[in-house]
Length: 154
Image 1 (cartoon, rainbow, N blue to C red):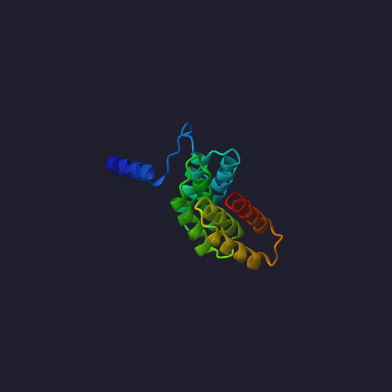
Image 2: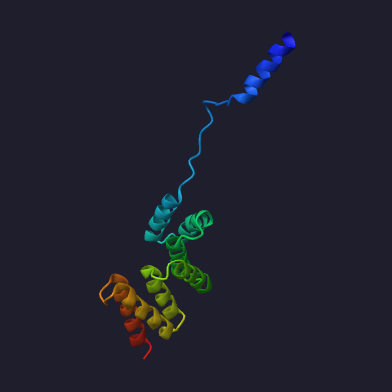
């Protein structure tokens, strides 16, 4: 009888979860929260923090075109731009979403940094098709960047 009680007690301990009142729970940020954190870091030019958040977001959602676009932007805008990594992630974003206006604008700007205005103009033409006009913000920004590039490189 005593052995049966011991076995029953052990089964009860194993079967029922034990919760300690003093053990804190750790909330893991969602991809949306990581994207928000990254955008906030980008606003203050904290590229390292933005890239850290975006790399985790991409691991959790590898097909997130916005995350790839912002990661590429962060690689491009940091003090020592990493254009190969920027191009890699802009291209992934555009593969995932060929009509991603932000990725077209930003990859065009990256091509200007890489002294390839013809490639930038191709993305400007894509933006005109996507937007259906020449007045959407992304088209206007890239057109201005191309005009500035040409004025400086006459």
